[in-house]
Image 1 (cartoon, chains in turn red, blue):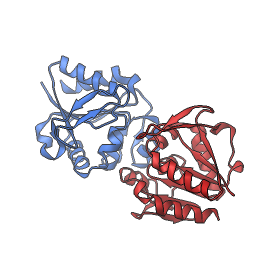
Image 2 (cartoon, each protein chain N blue to C red):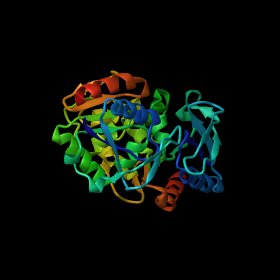
Image 3 (tube, rainbow over the protein chains, first blue to last red):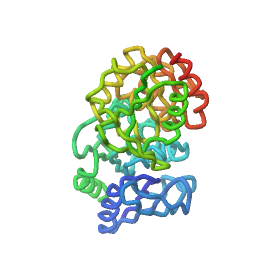
Image 4 (cartoon, each protein chain N blue to C red):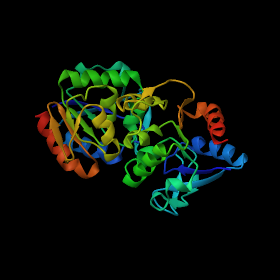
Length: 169
Length: 169
């Protein structure tokens, strides 16, 4: 059983949270919603789905978790404006523990300045940002580079979830 | 009187459209809503304000306008996923005509690859993207570099509008 932090804020892409969360729980893993403020209710951009933040990013450390899931949508853009969140992401990547990043999630990795020389994929609107950050953008449904698993959009979820679950075993 | 193209899509930051639009019209300038599809109703992210797209980006050319306004919010992220829009922005910047870019608007300029060596400001979440694009990020309420006028957020609107109007005269 792994403890997985889910880094999330308003306007997340609903299915990029719900589908991995469901699959991870089914395999016995435990999820923790981490965000900007403990107790805050954050909502998805399509279904307006409410999620309660259990821990603020300030009160957690990388040691508390075995892996990190970053759903896309506009949640990563909101989170990357917060210095503590960016620091947490940077430490997570540097720890070598698995990071599952989909859609706009690489935006957080760019601000954390951890993409130099890495292979990654993501949503098409951020391709130039990924390249400018020194990473190699790969247009595939799932890209695995060390501890970094990434996918482009909700259509890639089966491959994303499959690769992520394999990494947790 | 100047003809100003407003490049806009869903989830724009309401005031970053309404306030410049109001000020430009008051001075006798004419605005044209340009977007992904003619006739589409796009909505702001806070007030859900509806705006009708008058021209698709495919049916306009830089020659039709004297200046370009790009409001922020999540509209620029949606627009930069469209190749025709990115090409239009690139040609506009290269034409030397004024560009008024606020908040997330520099995202479009990054994808158009026109920021190398330019001075610009923008919303804090995209600072690293701006730097990685080879631009100099300046943390001021309005930054003017040649034909490029930029501001950070709605709080900067008076300075943004003032500098933009001056450029139109």
